[in-house]
Each structure stands twice: as C-alpha cells, then as structure tokens.
Image (tube, rainbow, N blue to C red; front, side, top):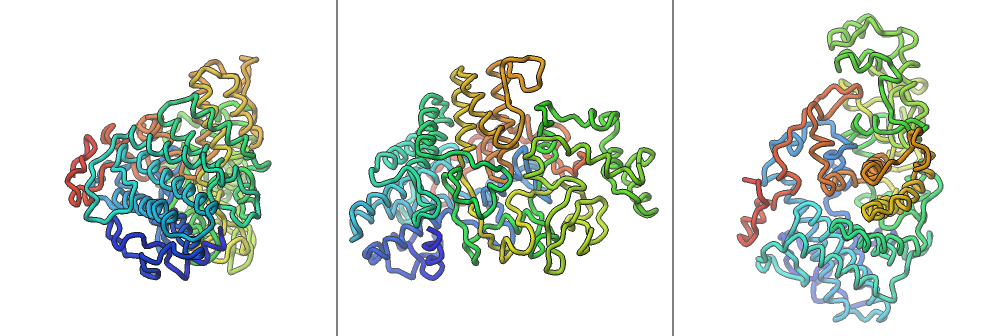
Length: 586
C-alpha cells in the first residue's frame, strides 16, 4: 500500500466525473473515459480513493482539519491561540465547516466512482475487483460516518454526480447511520476481503473485515445498539487483532503495522505523503525546528491517576496548593536559582514568591509527575522532564524548564515558539533525535484511525450499558494492564480501583478513553457523542491554560446547538434544499 501511495505522487489517479461535487480542480492526468480501463489504472484509481483520507493535510501551516488537530476542541487538548468555536464567535461561513464538508464529499465521490466503474470498466481479475469495491464501500461508509458525527444528517449520494446535480436535501441522522451500516455489511460479506493483513504484507493498509467490523460496531454504538456493537467488536478480536505489548513504543514507525493497528492513514517520509504531527505538535527543539501549535490541556494531565489507581490531587502533593490563587501557584513551577530579574517578573505576574525554594523548587514539582499512570510520561512532556531533541543538527537532551533561558548541546532548555507561556507539550507522535524523520513536514509513521484499544474500550462501553459490568471491567483492564496502570476490581471497596456500579464504570470508561487516546483525534467526537462536552470542556474558568491553570484564552459556550456543526453557508447557497441545523445563524 505504501508503494502505491508513492506512485500516486506522479500520477493523479481518479477522474470519474469531469466536475466533482465541490468544483475542485479535476484530475486531468488520466481522462475520465480511460480511468479504470487497465489493471494498472484500476490499482491507481483505488489508491486515489484511499488518498482522499489525506485531503486537508497541509505542510505550509496547520490546516486545522486533520484528526489529531481536532483534539484542540476536546477535554484533552488545546491550541496555542484562540479558537472561534471555543470562544463562541464562530459563524456558519467558517472555512473549517466548509472544508470538512468538501473533503468528506470528495472522498465519497471517489468511492462512488470506484463502486460504479470498477465492475463496468476494469479488466482486472474478478476477485480483485470485488475486493476493491468492498474497500470503496468501507471508505464511503467512513466518510459518511465522519459527516454524521459532526453535521447530524447530510445528503446521501450513492452514484457519481456533477456539481449541478448536487441538489438533494439532508437525510436524517438515522438514515445516514443506516447507509453506513449497509455499506459496511456489504464489505464484511465480501469473500475476497481478508480478516486482516499481517505486517509486511504488500497489501497492508488496505481495508480488512476486521476494520469493517470495528467501524460498524462504532456506528452501532452511536445508535446505542449495544448488543450489535458488542457482537461486532468480538469479531474484531476473532479476526486476529490485539494489543501491542508496549504503549510507549506503539506509536513509533517500527510498530505501525502491529496487530493493534486496524485502520490507519499510511504515511511515508516524502513530500505530500507523510504525517504532520511532528511539525505542529513538536517544538523548536525538535528536528527541523517545529511549531507547538497543538498541545496538551492541564485537564488531561490532572486526570492521569496515581500508580495505585487513586485520583491525582495537587493538594496531596503540595499541601495548601488549592488555597492559592491560580496566579500564585506559578511559584511551584519555577526553575531553581532564578535570577533577580526572573524573580521580579514572576512577582509581577502574581506568583507567591515567599513559597519559592531556590535550590529545591524543581525537585518539589517533579513529585507531582512521579508514580503516576505510565501513559502520562508516554504522552506528555511535563515540567522538568527531558526530551530527546536536536541542537545545531545533532542529538541533544533538553529539559522543559520555566522560565525558558536558552538551548544548548548539553543541559539546554526545551525551546518552544510560545516561550512567554508554559504549556504541557505532546510526546506522542513527536519524533525524537535527528534520525526518526527526514523532514518536519512529512513524518513516516502511520496515523491510526482505529486501533484495538479503541475497540476494547468501545466494547467495554457496550457491555456496561447492557448491565454486564464484570465483563466490561475485563475489557478495560486489558487496556490498563498493557499501560501498566492499576487494574479495576469489584471485590474490595476500600481500594481506589473499586468499581461500585454501572454508573461508576461508565465514567471510568470515559476517563480511560481520555487518557488512552490524546493526540489521536478521538476525544472531541467522544465528548459530542456522550453529550459531555459542555460540562467537561466549557466549565467556568476553562480555556487554553498554562500548566498551573492560568487561562490564556477563555472558552464560551454559546448553546447546545454547537454540539452539531452547521451546514456550511456556501453549501446552502449552492443548494437551497439544504436546511440549517437548529440554532445556527449566518
């Protein structure tokens, strides 16, 4: 699959219509009438359908459209600037809404072209054609699922169409889920589709039955059809998927084809075919001098439990912490041996400098990040931890310190492009040293869309909602055990790992998903699905926050209507049959 992706750079591959739904530039390298008419063009055409997964990826600046970038709206992530969606000033004309709509429908258009024309035009072997049609139906289902997660009912097109023909009204949210499930059911029924591909298989990266079961199970979860969802998730396990044994190294290139990865965007380290997580989640101390456009919310860091499974509390680490104002708490995060000028600046910002320990401040705050769930250290660069970065082209271990002073080959500070603020930064998907990637703009590591841990926790949710709490705990514990976190239990009520009932486990499952999937583009969609976004993200005082909780950009919740994205204004102007979601005005 990755070899095919590299071929796509030299040949635009799909042209089923001379003009697509959104009037984007046509694919002109192959004439529409010739597309699919040879075995090679069939392969390339199918690669074009997969390549729609990459629409919106940019390397000249953060697009805001990639899955991991949507974590900025979640409980677990944030961004370095103000976001109009979170500030309550967004309008229906915002390009984020129209670009997502456009990209998803471009993917649908490509899938429709393959589904229709492969059987009609391709001379490839029947088994291959049938498999490709099944893969295209999966991808069409995926794009409709993404649209339905956000817009809650969209027009359904199952044939290639011209822009002038795009006049359908919106199907209901339920009808879109029905179409998603119909496509995935057809995919599962295809006998030429394997359960999974082993690592190294030339077809690795193509859709499998396991992926179709996983995505169908997610669609059932959205419909709260718990028994059907659980049944599908069990089929994913039967297909041979499972957890990789090391959470920290799971997200390295060497393990991108482990049996945990069910459906991933295939990345290769060449222009226009790689990942951008390095570029926009790394730092100036990363290879290529990257931008920490997206970073970690203190909400997430505080959610990681202590090693014994008890809730983390700042008060238990630093008695009196909660009695201080947010500004005063900065004192605990200051580096040792501040200069007179740094002391003056911290005092001006409101830090309670009478609590400062000139030679012990760093050691005191480090206690807050020790003996915690190991996923914290795997996912987040915390204060006074080190990061394997680069300085002057060579490997250099740098330390996250506040306030920042300077980089150096030895014992330097981690440098960001937000040096006037002190933020938690990502480790996950941020390359280390000078050898893991060749360019900050295109990393080689695949980006997982569905992995087995996601399946296990959705499975646990489906079981718990049916009242099978014990079975659900077992699924959660598979994920926790792999991470090295304390396992949950129902036998000893005096321990912090005790699960009291279904309601208690429901929140534990949700928290497990929050701490397991940061920077994977999952949490925002979860909060929307659970209807928990308002309470978990828009609580009083929340926003883009520095490590000690000082709000840099506040969030403002404008109303429950923002649980659904608006139909883009430009689409309503094109197609008057589209009706706007309730609450949204131009």
